[in-house]
Image (cartoon, rainbow, N blue to C red; front, side, top):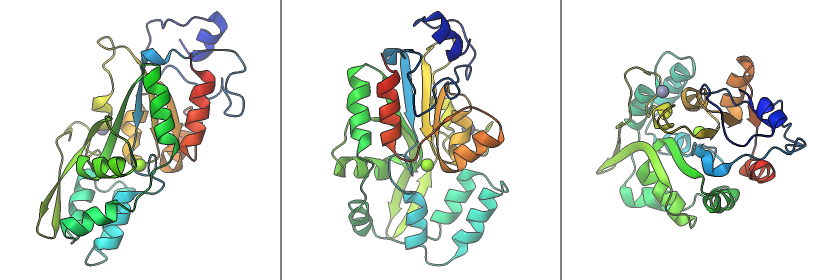
Amino acid sequence: MSIKALLINDKYSLPKRKRGSLEANTVYPAKNPNKNNYKLPLSECAVFFDFDNTITPFDVIDDIVERFSINKKWHKIEKDWKNGKIGSKECLERQFNEVRIKKAEFIRYLSTIKIDKYFSKILTFLKRREASVCIVSDSSSFIINNILKNNGIKGVKIYSNRLKFNKDKLFLDFPHFNKRCPKCANCKKSHLPKIGIDDKITIYIGDGISDICAAGCADIVFAKASLLKHFRKQKRKCIKFDTLAVVYNYLKEIAQ
Ligand SMILES: [Mg+2]
Ligand SMILES: [Zn+2]
């Protein structure tokens, strides 16, 4: 059953459904999301945020690779990844192999990064309504935790890759790599609730190729950049956003 049907019936409890069957966009155009007075029960929602270029205003991993690589090999690697020749894991491993930076300098660099100021507002809003929130990212917990802490955010569950330092070399480690989904480094969809076990309404917010696997399984998707392009190409519904202000206003409008 789609959200449209829920709206018509004005039911708040969710019927048995297939993952991905709640499709919001045609029902709530972003300009006037709540014209049908539907209220989304946020306490039944699990909200997933990508990190790079979703919570941060640019892709920090790309920036690290561009800034601190000792050569230009990353260009070709990036191209191969974009063309689908290699998966995210191989791409990140090979790109980080050419990066050199000492830990102290790296931490200094991370301290310069500001996040979208609406992330904190969304978190407060969602927590008050008992929605579960987590970050799923191809970055590392070290990077994400540092940036969040510098921006006054704590206590968000993170599923990401792991970063290790050895002198001026950085190594990524992939605890959530899934052989059955070889394009992913951190297979983001593996963190989404399992249907029938924890039957939540899943909301996904992301921007990139690495979000396709999880966003494709979510009920409501906020998308920008490559993820938006992909969804449009596939003629799948999603809500376009540029900054998290759009997501915040939309959720506020539609939430119970
Ligand atoms: Mg991203
Ligand atoms: Zn995957």
